[in-house]
Amino acid sequence: MAAFPREVARAAEAMRPLFAETPLQENDYLSRKTGARVFLKREDLTPVRSYKIRGAFNFFRKALASGAKGDGGAEVFVCASAGNHAQGFAFVCRQLGRKGVVFMPVTTPQQKIDKTRMFGGEAVEIRLVGDFFDDCYRAALDFAAQSGGLMVPPFDHKDIVEGQATIAHEIAAQLREGVVPDLMILPVGGGGLSAGVTRYLAETGAATRFAFAEPSGAPSLRSSLEAGRRVRLDKVDNFVDGAAVAEIGKENFRLLKHFEAGQVRLIPENRLCATMIEMLNVEGIVLEPAGALAIDALKDFSRKELKGKVVVLVISGGNFDFERLPDVKERALRFEGFKKYFIFRFPQRPGALRDFLSLLGPDDDIARFEYLKKSARNFGSVLIGIETKDARNFDVLRKRFEEAGWAYQDITDNETLAGFII
Image (spheres, rainbow, N blue to C red):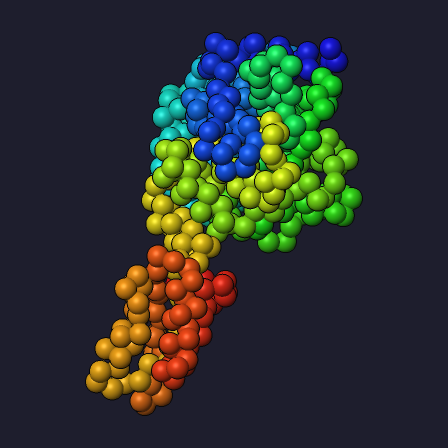
């Protein structure tokens, strides 16, 4: 066995006192939909509900084994994160009895702060600094330099990559002897997970094809592969917060740069929401947006491509804040075509609303009605949200609106305008 898989095996063995291996579950629902044998590697079932605990633990393990305690010898570890890395870091600090300081932006939701504090207990101090992550990260680096603390990166480090690769080690042991995945779909943020898993399987001789699932609003790996070098994105959509990374890790891109850009599937955020709702309603599985990326990527493969294949999907996390559920449901309805938003030029006269409502069918419902302004003396601009049970009903509605002489604009897919008024 090559050196890297041997080190990964040691890392996996060292983790077992902290938590059991996560299950690899064959999913009947997704298997029936695709014609493949679909297995889910359930990283949402670790003690911190994400795979980040693996890389954090391995970094600590290697640092402590080498005697490293920070530049000045202080026994303090430092991280900057508002999400899963902070929680994994905090859990490991408490389990190993090491002092940790977590830097989070002031804007971090209280739920994430509370969970990090719960996992870390007395071992972890949380400091809220800056409105944006970059400010928080700089503060963490400054603190580590001044205190002699050791910075624990979220993804861009060989020991983090090695720790995340334990997922592949477990998958290989959990599949029936002789069964090798034909296709593995990996979610991508900073690239630590995908770098570790692909390297492990390549060096153990597995003939597995890979696909990567990346948010459309944060295509750092796809953009870098297209350019042939690491690219820092000017703008990132933070909706998929667990994978919204502006630049792929340096070490991680070194391990991933031989892949083709076409192997990275860009996942539309609204479509991802539909997948999250589907898995919650059908399978009872609670997923954060990043945790649903690999499942959603199945939609980009034809049934012919997948039929009879063994497909493994890594489910990276389930830290979902249910306060986000209304937004997720809203996005899902818009993607599936069950909900649309219009701005109507509404006449200011008695009976106008009754005339408008008479055009709706039995399965159509007004979800929102709001006057925006009076466009003229006799007309006003009205925002109207309509939900329906069948997306085809909107074709009927448009025809009725036009025949009745209503002036309107469909703003459902106008992200700029919708972002301001919906």
